[in-house]
Image (tube, rainbow over all chains, first blue to last red; front, side, top):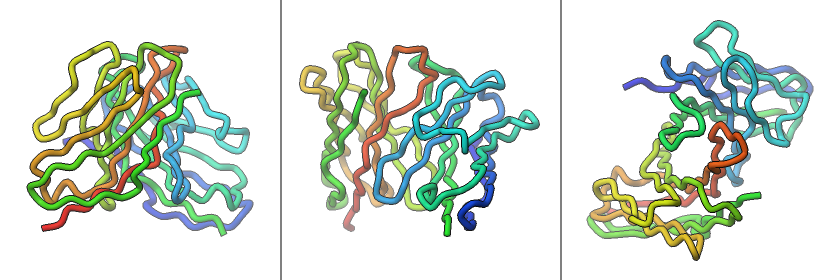
Length: 116
Length: 117
């Protein structure tokens, strides 16, 4: 069964460094999402992406964040200058459809980002 | 803004017994979707069950069923005949039908379910 994959599973970085989190969505999916979960808190929506552009973003997704689909298979989340509060589990998700009721989002296993 | 609340951080159930996980939500919208996702340890979140708000009938998927009370804004998950493989974190989630949303989900904090043999 097709799955969303994410690499790396755990990333440790120094404050102020740039990180790129990678995701490979399911191949026929058109809608892509990033969520994050700070330890002990809720899973929060960051951004949705469709047709090579951002569809929607939350207040969390400020200028330090960017997303890209560089090669038609990968979907990346870049954090330009990491802060301590960026430490979280980051989940990628994809879906075949967008706003319809058949919009089942398939999630990856997550990347745990630790900022020191 | 919509919110989702799961008031039970942890629950425990004996194998073969039934357990109910609670979820309440707050919204001013009339059309929306509700979901329960399961996240086993170190594994992906997978969709367990979904409910469209316009449907009065409660959704059922094998041993999983929901009790959807729209007026009370309540969406509980019942797991019957619990199995060891049901042990996981369970997330309740809301999705709006409006606003040009591409379907982003609003999650609760999750309930960690343990199943005792």
